[in-house]
Structure formats: structure tokens, C-alpha cells
Image (cartoon, rainbow, N blue to C red):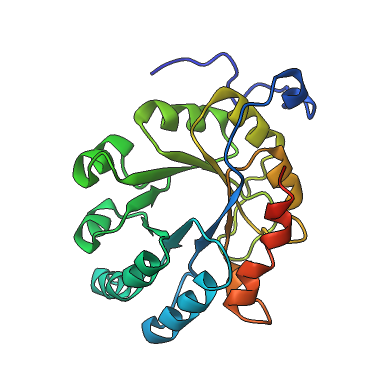
Length: 235
């Protein structure tokens, strides 16, 4: 395994002014990445997803169902994948490269215990989108990049009840990554329109959201639309 000069055990945290020492490279504007709730009713959620994707630009949707039989996940994919296709939104499945292959998904998002990127690539093909959860770890992100991930995900940046996490990376990890790598980075964890701006400014290529969309009092379309201003001001 490659040894890196700045392991996460290093007691020195990233300097908040780290990015200012480097010339900013061009990256596309930050985009929205919508993740499903951990449990859904397929028929009702299909309509909710249509509403969400009709509310504004969304780059990707991840189906993340926990403790659900494989057959139910595949049925959900069958219902939801056409919705994403109709809106030109990438459809990724959480955890399971094998089910992503069966469902014809555009890719898979892998946690640290969900198998190797190489195995997922061999199964899904070179055009599949494969993401890797990296928590607050620069080392894990470097490994993911070396192994061929298409993006790395850092978080949780804020308190979250959707997928509780004791990891709390500072926004500077996004800046560090964008200086180091051209691979996109995703910020996730308790993100809402009123706290997303620092993550966008730090360099997030994608903002992954859950409750901000599905629990929005105005409905999922309004939840997506609410991110419009913060993403529009990303520059």
C-alpha cells in the first residue's frame, strides 16, 4: 500500500487558509446530489421523486435503502430508474454493485465495507459511476482515487439523523481535495440551504442532501428549488 506524507493521524489539522496558497483551477459549478430516505413506499416515493426532479437541476440520485430485501430494492429500481432517465439524472444504488448491475443503474456508491472499487468496476464496466465514502479521511480519499473511484464523499459535515456519524470533517478537506485532484468530491451530512454555502465555497463539486428535500414543508420540488440560490452564488 502506498504511504502518504500527510496521514490522518497527523496532529496538525488543515490550515483554513490552505487553499489561498494555490491558484484556483477551473471546476464546473457545484451541483445537487439527492439521496433517498432509508425507507420508502415505492408508489408514493415515485411521485415524490418526480416532484423533486421537477423542482430544479439535480445531477444525481442515490437509492439508499437499509434492511430491505433484495427483491424490494430491485422493484424500487424498476420504478425509479425511468424517472431519473426522463430527467437526465444519474441513478446510483447504495452499497450493492451486484444489484446495481441487475437493475441497470448508472453506478454504485460504496461505503468502506461494501467491497472493492476494482471489483465493482469489473462488474459494472468502465462507464459506470462509482463513488466511495471517505468520512473525514484524506488517506481514504487518496486510496479511493488510486483505486479508480469516480468521486469521493466526505461527511458528515453537520449533525444528521438520517445516517448518524461521529465523523466531522472541516470544510477545508474539500479545498485540499480540489487542489490535489480533478476527481469530484461530494459533501454530505445534515446539509440544508442555510448551511450549504461554506461547503460550496470550500470546493464541493456536489452537495448530497436527504431531509432538506424529502422533509421540506413545501414538498420535494420546493426542497430542491431552495438550493437554487446557494448553488447560483457558488462562484
